[in-house]
Image (cartoon, rainbow, N blue to C red; front, side, top):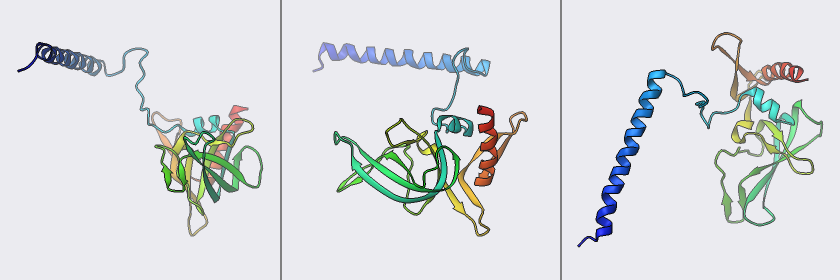
Length: 198
């Protein structure tokens, strides 16, 4: 036998679900009629990677080079694992001139425990990478914008260093974009961006 309380809650749930569905249909049709978001409600993809301009603005240091070492350790409270990455820069685009750059990323493996963090950049010893870094004084910097702040560098037979994935930038035309696919392209774009920010 079903209790009275259970009998009453089922129709209430169904009624609430129907009201929510009707409200959703009306809001979607209103949006479709106007073809744009209501005033003050910007639609944007929360997973979209930031533009090159944003990465440059958010970064204190931008370098490309070889990953020499990676060491994982527990945080002081033993609740998280972090990995310290050591990179030897071949090219510097912004920031100081140390011979080695060290930075910290969330996640890693300590003993039998592995911590994987969604959208965190992934590195490998021997890899060549471009990194956008920022941090507080006295602490190891972090990669800006998670996985978007790290790009793999592939060197071709001709010595050209290709950025994977590359950057798309506006070419000034309506809706047009151009690609920045090599470190030389990036160097030219960076000098222009840094000159504008001064």
